[in-house]
Length: 248
Ligand code: NAP
Image (tube, rainbow, N blue to C red; front, side):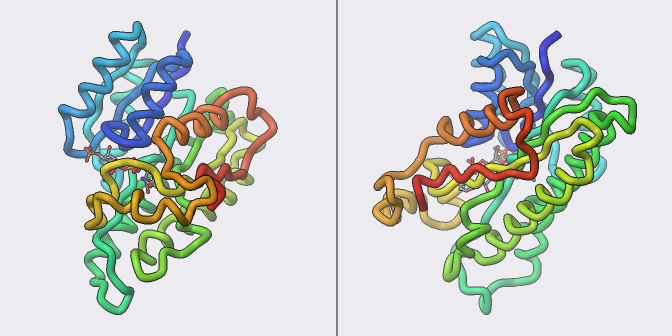
């Protein structure tokens, strides 16, 4: 039977590229989205056109009930879960910290930290040999911002990714003996819609000269690293990070 992969935030950008590549590699894919149903359905249609299995499921990863339903619907549609990619993430317009509101921090931490915590909890309940599962893999989509801090742009977003890195290290140790590997990728400047949410759609082209490889990255280049970490080729790799940031 196909391995079943749930990708959060898979309607666009890195998540969509990951869902499409995973389907090419033989996974049945749950394509989670928040609001953009048409984009999620287009990803599912592309997977079906290639002969793969996929389903689009709406859920806010920051909402406990939504996340429980997301995992239940994934398994109902596709079969027992094998792997999770915690990709859904948000940032907000560039600001100094002394201009930021608590409401903004709560939105960012809810999606970028509580979301992965909730999804990891549901995944561990299903994958862990302690709970009768057969093991599996989790990949968290962090950011180079976790290392670099995003000063003057969005230190709150960077801090949320720092939390995700720490979650990756801790959970990897916690569930290693239960058959689950937990790793993360840290993308750099990647061409997606996210930069528009930060108030600057052309951001990657503005900053790309600061990247040693002298360009921005494509979502597919991040997906390749995610798929490797999910695969059996990475069988001795857990609690690890792949920076997909062009050397930045
Ligand atoms: P994107 O193009 O803006 O796509 C974001 C995705 O997340 C969409 O599918 C969106 O769904 C979904 N999403 C947002 N909030 C959600 C929620 N509460 N519940 C469920 N889904 C939610 O973003 P991206 O650039 O591909 O980013 C993907 C991940 O990579 C994020 O974690 C981001 O922090 C990380 N990253 C990106 C870059 C970069 O340069 N792009 C760099 C480093 C790290 P809808 O379509 O329904 O809104």
